[in-house]
Length: 115
Image: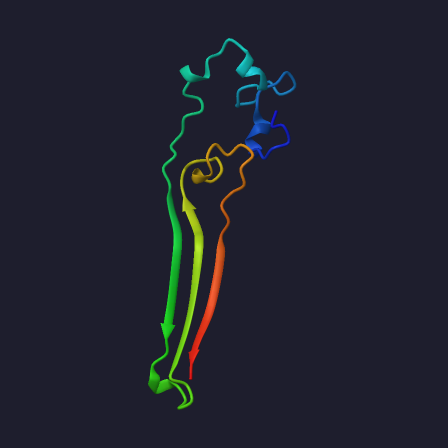
């Protein structure tokens, strides 16, 4: 069914002769007389809110530093921190989700010291 590609675990809940209580359409729906375009089965709310690029930093006041340091800044940044959505599929920006790899999160921390 997935031709060796990534698939959601919901696929296990599809109808088949062995799983007659499955809630997902069967594998052979595409070759049957059922027209998926006329069904609302695959429609769902797909809005999303992405917390994508967050950075925070703090520069210590000069009064806290020794005389050898003129500036000290600590900072951090996060990319693709979170996605809030009722959509049950993969990441909404990944496309159809078939064989796609979800967006990665990345984290960075730093220290900027000036003498």
